[in-house]
Structure formats: structure tokens, C-alpha cells
Length: 568
Image (cartoon, rainbow, N blue to C red; front, side, top):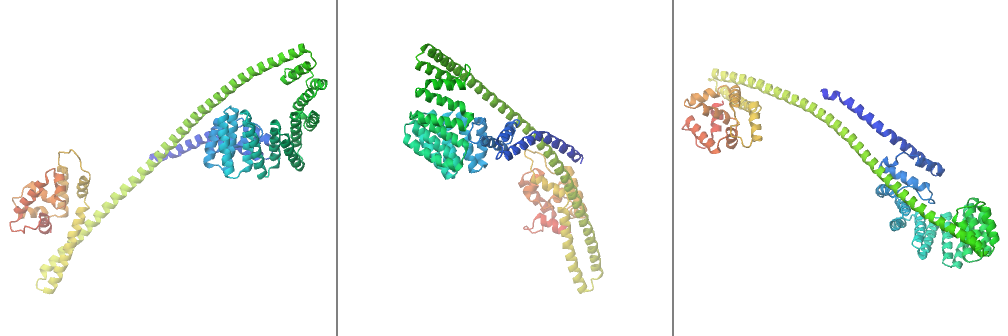
């Protein structure tokens, strides 16, 4: 089996190819595992690791879904994630089949945020609604609270204040059920601010008192800052500028990182309350040099309007208009570049996917070819071995039948010889006759077995099993006739001579037919072998039967005549 010698080489080649293919994949999985371990304690390091994974789209569906979920969770529900809609949809497809209920709700939230980034507000709202229904169904209140918060933010784009209030109220309820006090406080703060925008200041203040009580329990500086900023906005909307000023100053003290934003709010309060010099002094402190900031120039324009210096006010209004034009042009260019970037990214993903699929198909074809070669070699080996065993078994069986045949023939000869010598002893004669009868039957049975186990009998049987359509020649060729006559002469040595002794006028063709008829095939099968009509078979049998003896019973068949008379 030379083919089997090449199997180790093929297997070695397959292992080397698999190792080269999986080296990069192993590195990706190692980085993914490390990011998952770091995420609960060090979000920034986990985000850096996730951003450094090369070609994450080449990960398998399960690991790619895990990668997307880690990216979404690393944002801690506060910043927009950078993954595209296409990536989230692929992750969602796998998670919907294999993920946990919480993961299915979360992936809906992340996909909705991706739609918002692309400006697909309707699709985002549909996705949020579906994820919220799923989260409520499985009582995942924390995820439901975040979904309601993002839905409220999206309703701002639709300018639907009633919907915003409703969603912030739902978010508050869900966070309360989840016992997430921090998120509950933020949701209530947003709800209070929204009530202030629709002039429901009594509701806003009532809710803010509850937020103060929660903040007192948590004692988180960032939460305290957000509460102070919310109070400042509420009092500013209520036109209680003294209290708005107080809370803006408190917010600036609590969070220096947001000082500029709160200082601008404070400057607006100064302007609204008529403290123009304080507003200008504060703005000059924030922006000591000339700036192209829109808010700064807008404050300057309002300041000089209040001072009735219309020339300078007009100058700053013109600067604001130029800034708006520049911002619009820049925003348009940014949107075009972003769309082009996403298109190129999607195109690269599709090309990578096509190349990855082509590589996987090539590897699979290689494995299939090697498998077929191995299986074919093994099957061929065992087939040859089985064929050799069959031939050996058949040869041993024929040898055994020949030996037993010779043994029985010898015993029969001895019995007949004894019978001839012991005719005077009736008892012995009867015993020997019974023995002769028994041995004769056994001898006939062995002859029959030897005949049915012969090669010519099996050959003719196989020809009958596999008919050959459109064949106009006899299946029983001269070569097969000769084999049949030789085999019968070996098994029944006196058969041919007995036929001619009984019927000297028997033709050679009829003699050969008698050899065929001894095999025991029916008339239809004999007609197939001889390629003649079955009616011709019956005529041939009748004619031979008449030649063999006119006094034979009509009900006795030719086969019985040949077996009972000429084969013994």
C-alpha cells in the first residue's frame, strides 16, 4: 500500500498550514481575554487593548460578538461607541441565537446607539423599543433603565418633551427596581431638568430634593457636581438669577474640568441679570485672547448691545455668523469624510471576509482531498484483504468438499464390494443396503454442494442476476460450455457416458443442454442464458425426454430423470 506512505506527509502539511493560519487568531484571542479580565477594574486599559486588536472582523462569530460586547461595556454607558452598525448587526445575529437574555437586550441598546450615530433615528427608536420590550420581559431592570435614558435623549431630536419626561420617569423606576441608586439619581436629575424646560418648576424642585437625599447617601463628587449644575439650570430657567449664580459657582468649585462650560452659563446669568461688567470680566478671564468660540463672541455681542455700542456689537454678530458658516462647512466635510470612512471600512471588511472565506474553502478542500485519499486507501486495502480471504475460504471449502467427496466415494465403493461379497447373509445385506442408501444420499448431497460451490455455477448465477439489455448473443459462451462440461465430468464422472449409453442418437447440443439442465435453473433462466424463447426450452426438454425413454412417467420432469437415473 504505497498510498499509505504519503499520509504522514499530507498530515504534516495540514498541521503547518493550520498553525500559520491560527497564529494571528491566537494573538487576537489572547488580547480579547486580557481585555475581558481588565474591564471590571481598569476600563481605560481594557479599551486600549480592544482598540489594538488587529482586524477583529476576522474573528469567528462567537469571539467577534464577545469583542463587540466588551467594546460596548467599556464605554460604561456614557460615551458613544465606535463600532459600526454593520459590526453590531453581525454580533446581534450570533447573540440572538446563543447569548444570554441580558446580552440580547444589551446588544439591542448598542445597535440603537450605532444607528443614532449614523443619523438613522427611526431605526434607532425601533431597535431601542425592541430591546426595552425584551429587557422588561426578562426583568432586566438595569439595562431597561439605560435603554429608556437613551430613548429620552433621542426624543430630543423629535422635539417631544412629553415623551422625554415619560422615558426619564421610566428610567428612574427601572433603576429603582434594580437598586442602582447612582443611575437613579442621574435619571431623576434629567427628569427634573426636563420638567423645568416645560415650566413645571414645582415638580422639578420636588424631584431634586429626592436626588439630594440619594446623593447624601452615596457621597460621590461627580454626582454632587451634576446636581449643582442641574439646580443652576433650573433656577436660570425660572429666572431666579441669584440662586442660579450661587449654584453655578458651586458647580465650578466641585468640578474644575467643566469650569469653562459652567463659567459660560454663569456669564449668561450675569447678562440676564444686568451684570454686564461681571459677565465681561468673567469671559475675559476664561478667554484672555481673541477667540473664534461662538459662545464667547455671542456674549460679547450681547454685552455691547446692552452697552449700546452697536458698532462692536455688529462686529461680534458678524464674527458669530462667520463661525456658524465655518462650522456648517466643517460639519458637512466631516460628515462626508465620515461616510467615506465608513464606506471604505465596510468595503475592506467585505474584502477581508471574501479572502477569509476563500482561504477557509481552500483549507477545507485540502482536508477533504486528504480525507478522501486516506479513506480510499484504507477501503482499497481492506477490500483487497477481504477478497483474498474470500478466495482462500472458497478454496478451502472446495478442497474440503473434494476430500469428503473422495472419502464418501471410497466408502461407497467398499460398501458395494461388501454387498457383493455378502449376498448370502440377508441381515448383513439389509444393513449394507441401508448404509449404501445413506452414503448414496450423502454422496449426492455433497455432489450437489460441490456443484453449487463451483466457479461455473456462480458465474452463471451472476449472469442471471445482472442481465445485459440489448444483447443478441447467448450469455453461455463456448468457453463457459467447456467449463461446465469439465466441472460436471469432475463431479459426476459417468454422466456423459451414461447419457450416450442410454440414448446413442442424442445430439451434441442436446447433450450439452443436459449438462446445463442438471444445474437446476428454471426454463426462463435457461432461455436467458441461451438467448432463446422459453417455449423453445420446453420443446427441447420434451424431445430429450422422449429420446431418453418412451416408458417414463409423464409427470416425471427431465431434471428428475437426469438426477435420479444418470447422476448416480
